[in-house]
Image (cartoon, rainbow, N blue to C red):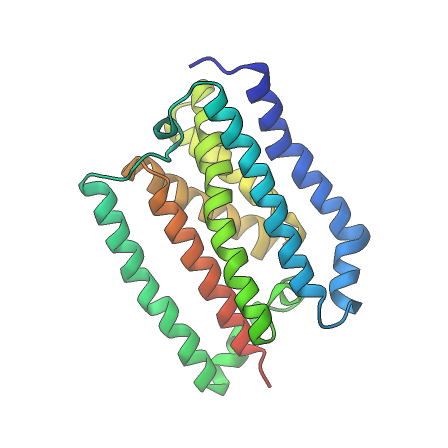
Length: 234
């Protein structure tokens, strides 16, 4: 499948323009707003991210379908086959200890201190602090799970595979995904997001559907945010 000028434009938007816009706005305004903006700053930040991700994903999917391409070609077909069900079972198995971790951290002062060390600096600004923010965080996590997988694993991997072997395409997409998290720092942001991008990309290739990486992405985001949230409780 030969990419069109519209595909090139969308890749530039996803991989360059939007991350650059977000990072510039983060350093110019968003970070200060989170640090000094009061009780509604985080929920407003979550809401903004959800709107932007859904809008960008809607543009990509609309363009994809308008171009006459099948949803299955970007990983969004009706899931089936043993690989899908094995993948879902693995996600469920991983979700159980990740969910249990939230309970453990809530009940252990030592565990809370260990988690606090991981959420210092910029990442701590993102962590929900009350029940309202936790509900919005769950919404943001589900949004990121679906939208970022469509953008980075579905569309970008498809585009990269036109020029590169499968493994290299997954790695290239993961690096772009990691760099998009530069605002969180090189360690917890770029490095961890790149590694996660590789894992999600491999899951996509093995199951031939986005639904497994979507589920895994959402589970990891939900549980990491809630773990940080209970760790920061006084």
